[in-house]
Length: 343
Image (tube, rainbow, N blue to C red; front, side):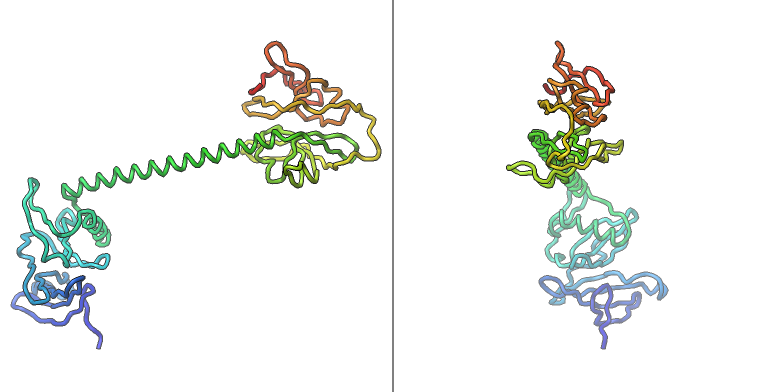
């Protein structure tokens, strides 16, 4: 036979008084089993209104609570929430207060400057959390007492502090990551320049970087793409290109040329003078920082004759009295005198 239940409690007796329908229910709690009289006025139609708690008895049968003693002008419901049962007192402004059934024998009512208060019902924090949860479960608002308002303000400040701490930690990690990236870029840019050869015998000189590294380098960097790079140097020269970054920040390979590590047998008739860059300097051009190789001992003509691509941006010659260098493309387009960002 299936047991009859109401609000999760087992109904073991169902009878009528002169004015009410009464259902007696067993409510198991942490320490004992309570008996709850749920009542419904006979004046209400059968399909209208709910059974509400009228009286509660302890395991010995002693009366420990009745609704009339609350002198509450609103409605009382018994609601299961988070493995407990609560008496919930609902007024015109929402859920006013709650009492855990398993603590009915321990509560005391005291008066404060703000009115009547209940003690012994449990910690204020656990009761307020339950109150907020039950109000949400019932789809109604709740009215906070003065002490609940104070606790809510404490929670708000604690939540703000946690949020600020979390945001500070996020910022710290981002800053650490930024510094690590910048350090890695400096390490790559400080590598000794290497030389590769095109199939036409043209020489290309640039920063050795792998497929996983080159996208982190500044716009305008001359890259020699290699298979790997370690303490022993670069291995597997593959191609040369200039890093270009689109308006959206996407990295692209400009003036891409396939290379080999050795000069072709058909030797070029170009000048064999040493034209390796002495350093790589940073300049700001059109609002962006660009890495530019500096050739203090050679002019553009020498670079062009030795197979440098016409679109490569270089700094040539000695600095003037103000420390400025001439920036130009190997093809002949002059950018002008610019001061390096770091000298």
